[in-house]
Length: 389
Image 1 (cartoon, one colour):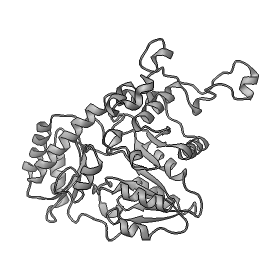
Image 2 (tube, rainbow, N blue to C red):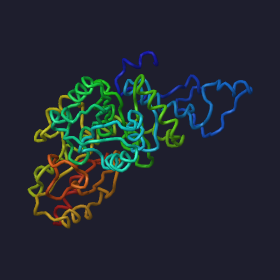
Image 3 (cartoon, one colour):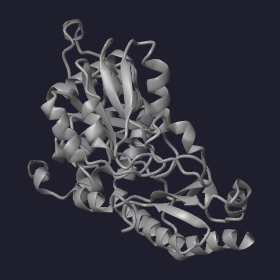
Image 4 (tube, one colour):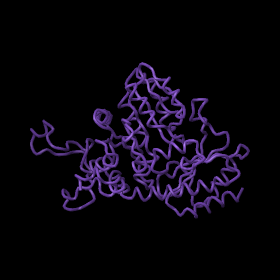
């Protein structure tokens, strides 16, 4: 099976990657190693660090199982695990940047990544600038002599702008810059950024891979020198992930294609339903033909996830949004996404934008995640909320 892995579809790989029954008494599930100390047979072995495993923080067969599985999904040389998606983002960024470097960040970036950049980079003497992900001509004008990388998030957090990844990579290659992308929304099932030439790929395992809203973890993937830099930074900063969380994430991975497909189908069906509501100004879902980046999404992505958003007309007050959300029985109110159950959340987008050219909803905003429930039940649940208005 191993020698043919590159010829298998990514969906099949989710079922078979990371298993090694021949070394585990025929048991498909990997053993769960909880340890700090790893003993050496002789002092000379210990002195010269002989042996595949030397200390629990540096890796065990448990962590290797998930690392190998996710690396296979992306056809990557390797990856490092992180204790959260945000930790994975910081590992990716710090692996390519040093003092006096400059990086370009999309203005539609994830809020916690924005906070990290704005609060920590000045302390580290790292320069940054935000760019409009729909204006790549302007992006090129922002490149300076000390620019080292361009960060990508597609679709953008909150308002779901699709980035022309091919063009960004072309710009990076032309100017000898590193490219990094947060690929959590689509996972390897719907988009493999390495196929476009991206250098570093980040994904929050917290979301779709684990799939059950009960752990936090991230992963950063790379090839050649990029992988070495990721491994160096991760090791030197002491990043460590619980073996129990690794085991649960690997178990969640096995059903990723099925859960993602159902979540995607639900989101599109509900987005189309919401398009019919006259109190809604915009539905931010790239799979809808009315989305301004629909053709770009259609060119690059194999599917859409269950996360999207809506903007209400300016005369709809936030109290009305509360009525809709508070009267839903199936949709929960809470952060995160990628799990089996549907969620609603709201936020002030203007707090997460720096550029006047970026789209900021003037009407009240509601982010929607559709899980694995029946689509008609979810629509009926939303109808109850709308009727309460």
